[in-house]
Each structure stands twice: as C-alpha cells, then as structure tokens.
Length: 87
Image (cartoon, rainbow, N blue to C red; front, side, top):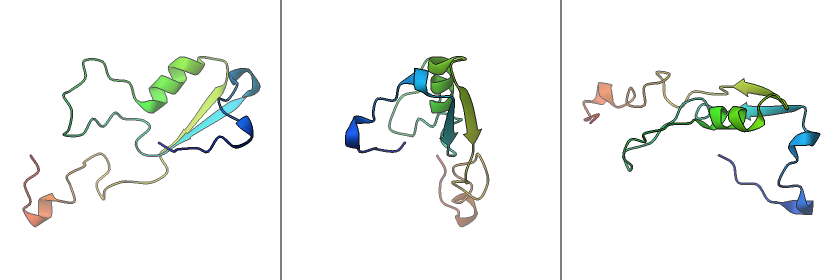
C-alpha cells in the first residue's frame, strides 16, 4: 500500500477518466493477514477488490514486481534454515 499526497486535489481518481489501472507489488494478489489478527471469514486481496470495484470500466494490469522472501509464497522460508521456529 502506498500513501499519496493529495496535491492539486487529484484524489479521489475519477474512474470514468481512467482507461488502465496498474497494480504492482507482491502483496496485491494474495491476502496476508499476519499473526496479529484472526482469520477473516471473507478474504479479498487488494487486486481482487480493485477488480470488483472497477468491473469492466477500465483495464487492470498486474505485475508482481519483486519477491518478499527467497522462496516465493513462503513467508517463513528464510527462517527455516536457521532453526528458528516458524509457528
């Protein structure tokens, strides 16, 4: 998630003025709740939420961008070789 400064009153974006929306980042496609919360009954990723909101009014482009850990998708892979508990 990125915090934007609303300089020149650009935000909120007007969907009718957009042809394409780029969603970039490894956390956009999957929901990562973290250990600080209960598991949500209904889960919606950033990407899915944007797609649901936009519908067919604009093209949604997605790129993973980078990996967060060495092992894609395994948040605890970097800890395991060091014998650190992975819960």
